[in-house]
Image (cartoon, rainbow, N blue to C red; front, side):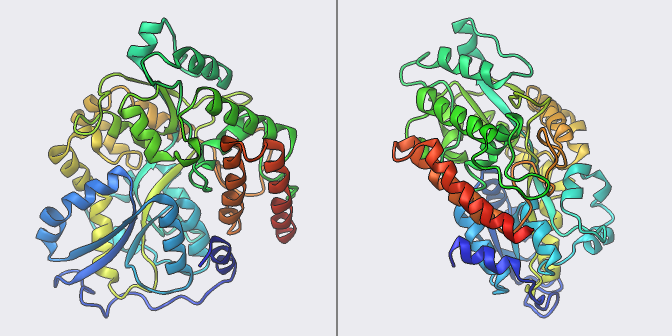
Length: 446
């Protein structure tokens, strides 16, 4: 199924499949197995490593993981959930999908499970994250594995050597100037890494926050498309020029994973991206820059803050026949106990943070996250999904528009902008083409 077809399926309200009971692990106590689909981020690699000797050992429930890169994951999970195929018992999804799919009746509510677990403590979940996963009925339709905003990461040692100073709250103009001065600080080192890989959740995660703070928006409150507006254009011109002049080589193939590798291996001096990346940068097992990274608020231009709000969450399709077993895994994976397991076995810097207030009170975690923990929490708390820019929006959402069609629209426009990095097109041509697609979407909303 193509992304366009998937988006089309999402628009149509489907009948919910049968959920709960009936499977070989239906009661969550008698062993059996569940099928889990998840994104290939470092935190997911950790849980895959830990599950057999902890969760499966304690419950007898075998977990069959399917792990995919972000863009592939989005296509796969959309196919399965929207078509009611029922191949997976749990999947990692964002707040974007959670809001749309719970309204269609495609997801199992999970509040009944959290309420029944005396140790879970759902009230400990950070309010902005929990609210983004709740339906109008107040129930949770996904449980957060980790939450994130976005911030700027930079090499403190390189800045000191070059006599550069990073402001606590930098502007994008200041970042561009610093990137130019840090470019070439070491052989082969570039000034900054910014995602150029096409995808609404890849390139446009950071780029839409740039659009917001430059005064742009995808749509006005009354659904007027703004993709080739002066503000949107200025933001994209700035972003693509910065990458072409001082960014990573092969930008059109660089997403979250590639930029993480670039900074952790000493190939770039700065990176603007997810706060959740900090744990990997401070992990001696995979990073060459442990202790050398500084952290600053997401860069701004016309707004006070510009960080995004996102979480990767465990959602249960109603089609599962192993609801109790799947819920048992989701509860464990998002629990205080799991955070302790990660800290003790893998290191406290690798704890999947950004979802629980109590995480930031753990002494070992506070020490391990000294340079980024509190800034992560403050960035999440200052993220404003209702008013992320300089004008009112038609939906709630910072780095996305909460309508089914946005996944396809954002991906199409990002594919056009990717051509700017390779010289195949100009920003004006890419955004004029994107404007036409956005106007078609706007007409449907009106």
